[in-house]
Length: 591
Ligand code: ASP
Image 1 (cartoon, rainbow, N blue to C red):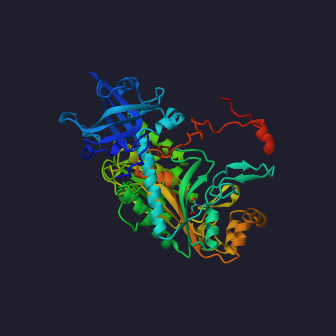
Image 2 (cartoon, protein in one colour):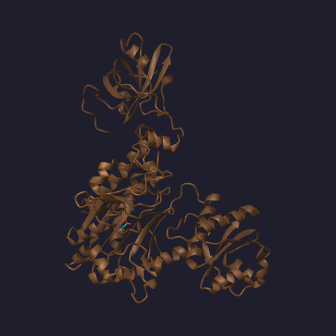
């Protein structure tokens, strides 16, 4: 039960908290006209404040002047009302409303503001075009679903803070105007007026600052941190988003994982999200790729991948042979007994292509052999061996992707998810959590260089002689196929940090210019340290069962990075540009 409001001229109680035990007493409530009904002389108003809804009854005689005003009220007008709390007659009780067995017989009524007719109804959960919702977000946020989402978000963040405070973490703010912090995305830049020609970058994460805080002896840091990444947007991406960012000194992987499990378990428990208590299982990146074709495997359904390269080697099928000869792999999965037409099967190629693959081959199991356009290229033994490896039985559909091993895995992994969705293979209400560990440290990047798979401050395992074989001390938390967060144990010596910079193609000079402050700090007694960041928007969308993170952010951007309400981003005055020493080369798009 929330605390009573301080009585003032507008209210002395929350509308949604009134119950039958207060019948016979006077009350003053304030809020918005949620709905208004005229019933044979009586006017009924559902009054809404943040706590809920209560019914006002306005009587032509007993309510005096209030009646004339009530006749004039419309949805979303703002009112304050005084009257007596009265028990409703048995037949008028509304079991769907917390306050449904009482009503307020109004004696006086005051209108505090009028409202134009809103562009969409506030009192119903109807589908409204998202652009219209975002343009009028202040109204959209009045709707019950949005109120629930933002209160849920508050609960999630509060739980995180509480759990960390109990464990001695300190909340430290880090700068928003800073230098580039590489997390693999493009930076948002802010021109400096005082130093024309110089630019701040908005932080992609507080990564380097939190590491410096460990070197400064804070040992346990956290922050509800805003991060900025200029990326092409997808359903679960925003140009600015919020992380629970934390870092710990004198720790190994197990320490960070244990704290993260405690925080997330508390979040899942308070929000009623059904996941087993920690410790949560761990799976290596290698195994995740091999079995699920993804580094964030959704294990809630089967259709696991297998490598059938050995079974198929030496066939007459030139496509597979040339892939296998070039060091590639053939990955396959048994989709089970599925009815799929030729055109549906062909349609699967689109999924594979979207994920870098070339094509998918298929075969139906029939009497221990394949029925497939490519069956003729394989011996009976090869067909039987593959059926055996995939546990196939009559009627099963087998799917194959041949490519460079990682592409084959990822393309087939995407296909697996598509089939899971299409055939409804994820049982309603089931959830799964796991850690993915032992990521590769480096991956091939453009220009023949290596790139860091996590970020270049992650501690590596293995020898720099063979960067491609090195693993990292990174970890990701995955729930239902979503990466909820990730982090790592960090490098804590300047030598190793320089080595990593070298591998990713950062010369000494550039490393000094961009990260001199870090390399410097590492010289003055840097403890072993590590941390993690959890995507709060994703966590809230997950526990609130929302389709998109835009549903759990008060003022999000559209898919093209705009805010239809404020009109951001927008051109600025020439004067402003001149002051900043900035000239726009590309004219802003009109409109
Ligand atoms: N800074 C990393 C990120 O935003 C998380 C971490 O390594 O703690 O992904």
